[in-house]
Image (cartoon, rainbow, N blue to C red; front, side, top):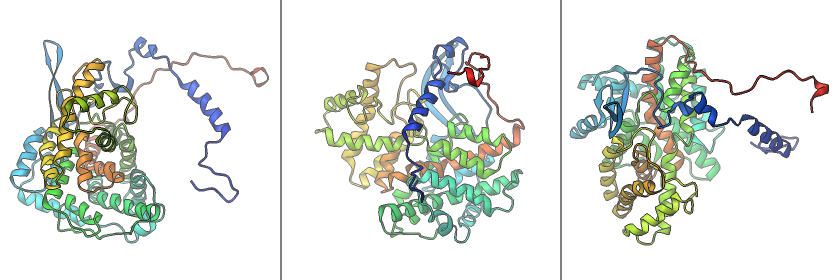
Length: 459
């Protein structure tokens, strides 16, 4: 934040604030043994990382373990949208040589695979909403560009409330209308936010292309982003598949759970979506692919022979031992809260990534990714107890794809949001249709009871 006219910088952490912050930090520390004593599930997970069952959903399902003789046995991961295996859905989309995100959005919202007429009509509806209010780009997006597109995206969503005469109406028809508008507008809100930031804070040329209502959502995203609006068919198809694979991921991921929690209060659609965007912005949820790209950039500089598996293994060991990259001991893109043997999204995506890498002349880079994918779990297993196995997740390759598509890193997480808004919308409608109660988890106080101390007796 800029300094005010009186010369005080409100964005500075002053010494008195630092002193108070230390007191605040010390006052919030909780003895970790109390979690065991009262069987409190930290992060709503048990000791093995399994999420606490907090609701029911029809939208999608993540499966990574089988129960055999009362024991949890890790299996290859499966992701289902409305009961359909996502592998079959992607196979069907690819066999038609079609774009699939709109079809998957229809499935998530309406529990039905659309026939040709239903899909064509649905695409026309989405295209109809591919237009921002008059002067919105100038008056909202351009006025206060931010270095973080997720903040700008959330602000834009909240501002759209002011343009909606039925913003507070949470009837299902109105919420569906609002959802379809946001699904259609997210690419433009994201890209235009980046263009404003790049122009005003990076001194780059400003491009604001009007959307094309005759093409798919994935194609339109590339169309409005690139200065010349050009893209290859494979580029658009790979981006489309990335969005299909990110459209939903069960009800237990943080941002979707946020959708359910906030929706349960009866609030408006714009507030609900903004809250979910705030969740997805967090690097523990939506920022892993950026870290993967940064990790590989460093890796490619420091590993002399990318084909030498011993050298690659040594570097991975250095990462885990906090000697290399960001010294946090993490191999980004490897490991997942649910999947252990395999992430189905990563397996599906990998073949598309390989094709794009070949088109871009980046076969050696893809080979390095493949090598790290194979070696990283072995190095992790040498150093840490593995309760359920560890595997590469979808973020391992998504950042590489976005890099090959010349997408700026500032847009990686917003593109995630452009896909996940379909799932959030389906879950919001599901919550409004079924629950009727505010979601209110219990917290047990760990603070001892104390007697009041008069002012003149305090130390």
